[in-house]
Structures are given as C-alpha cells and as structure tokens.
Amino acid sequence: KSWQYMSNHPKSSPIVLMILVAAVSIRRKTKHRAKVREIFDIVKEEAYDRLAHCDGSGGYAALHLRDDVGHAMYSSNVRERLFMYNYVWPRVIVEVRADNRVRKFRKAADGKQLEHWDLNTNSKRGWQLRKTPNKTPGKHVEVTSSAKRDP
Image (cartoon, rainbow, N blue to C red; front, side, top):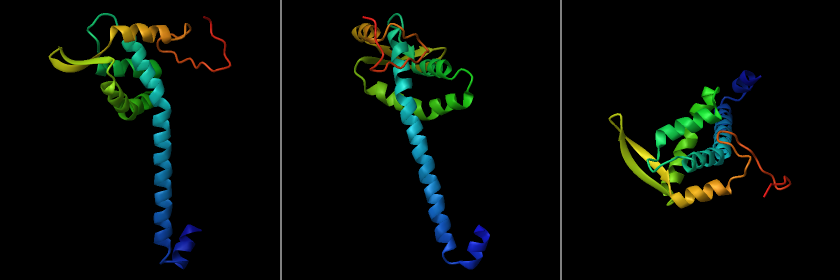
C-alpha cells in the first residue's frame, strides 16, 4: 500500500516519509527521557543511602558506588543496568557534585586515581533518621500518604 502511494505521488512521498521519520524519532526520544526521569530519583536515593551507611571517612569510590547501585537494582538484567550506567548515572554525578553535603576528593586505589564521595557526618545521621524503619538497602519501598507509619 505504501509502495502504491509512493508510485502515485512521487513528489509528496519523500515529504511524508521525512515527517514520519521525524515523528518516530521524537517519540523515541520522549520515551527515553521519561524513562531516565523515572529511574533518576530512585538511583539518586539509593546512592545517598549507600553514602549514608558508609562507615569511616574514607568515602565511597564513585565507580564502585555506581556498580553497587546497579547490581542492587538490576542484578539479573544487564540491559537495564547498562541503561542506568550510561544515561542515568551521569545525571546522578552532576547532582552529587553540586551537593555541598558531600565531600568530594580523589584517592589512589590500585594505582588509579578514583573520585571518592563522603557524606557529611551530620548529613549521614539526618539521612539515616529520615528513612522509614522498614527501608532496607537494595530494596525500594514506596510509602504512600494513605499508608500508616510507625513512630
């Protein structure tokens, strides 16, 4: 049917084709951005949880934190984990680098200079107190307004 349209309307068919390709491209980008926005808050909260539970002042290597969060969220789905690494994690990096509660420093580990992040002590305590009692690392629990919390 499309071939018939192209043969009957040779002048307008390239324009129609370009419009369809543009529509498909815009739709694909919109879905991609929506997925990144959906996952971003979950990944950022998981990263801050791990920073808050990090003992000592040595901090957490950013790459190791990325790997730990990725494996905790997508232990068996490599495709989703790579999507998180490539598209969501760079946004988390920007957010953490702009956060004054996080101390950023470079540290040598196995001959490599890695960026380390360490959450401020007061922020660690506050972050741990803010979390709900049923929150466990690696698990994502949604608390709705209708759900009752224990004091």
